[in-house]
Length: 435
Image (cartoon, rainbow, N blue to C red; front, side, top):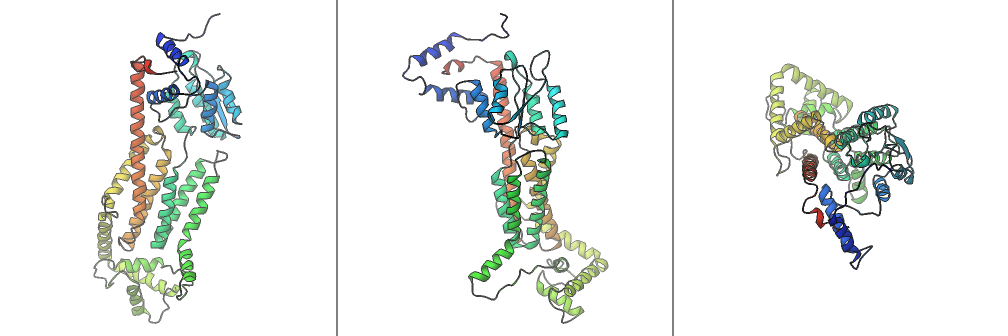
């Protein structure tokens, strides 16, 4: 028989097996943990699990990836049945990718073509198992890039970011309604974007539905809190949560810094005084009240455009120079850093390369939220009290940056270890591993 491959067994391997057979342990003991730790260190992983054979290893790997009914696994046809059976064990379907006639490994061009068709047909696989036939290494770097591009072997959004975002949204809604609305719009937009990207995936909608429900409940936080106050304390009922009209915010926003327009301050009293000068006795917060304020604001813009522009520039300077958090840089610096990192990482495709596509969504949402807040601060009042909810957004931004660079560092370190292993495969540490 002509063998398709030959094993490489050295005396150190034989000695390691004999040492275990002569020890007090055959199925348990210190040899297995030492072997698992050595393997994890060699490949740059946090953990490793030793199993009885490759069939069991493939099975638990598919289970860890939550492969199940409705999912598809791709592999090559010229392999042992375990490469396909591991999917059947989990209730998933199996499909095959053609091989390269020179290496007999999975053909990367064929894989790319099949992925493109599957994307159009919305039948992308959840797992792809390339097989190193007869010990020949596969083009793993390219396959990994395809995995990040087409979404197999990808992880979901980090629950910590979602929880922090919901807390920030509830705080925003309590501190200032308009900021809460901005957070609501941003969050719903992100959820919609994720839903569109997941439209071809089955069984991944439950988390989005739960998150959407939480966001909608959070958006009602002002009404819920006021209602709880009315029930818990003996005071005049609020009846409803009063909301300022947009024209009211624009008008009195001109008074948030010293000006020559005759608007004394950013306050309800300033709005009422302006309306009283035009038409005394108008009911506060009525449609007529807001209509008069709208006309007053437009008159200021038309007749005093230079002063209005100066007011807005001064408010922009104030809010962008504010650190929001005592340990954070000025908001303008943080926004420039975030925008620079976001644009560079997106243009270079770094989110996919490090397997952190959810970071793009989180950082993008934070940038949009900060931008919306800056816009409303310029139009309304650059008060640090109103900026409190942005503290959570800045913490989320810091988390994205730390995880981004942490993942990049781990990948670079892992690649360095792999290169060292390929150059020196039989290093002095290899003989120290037990079977």
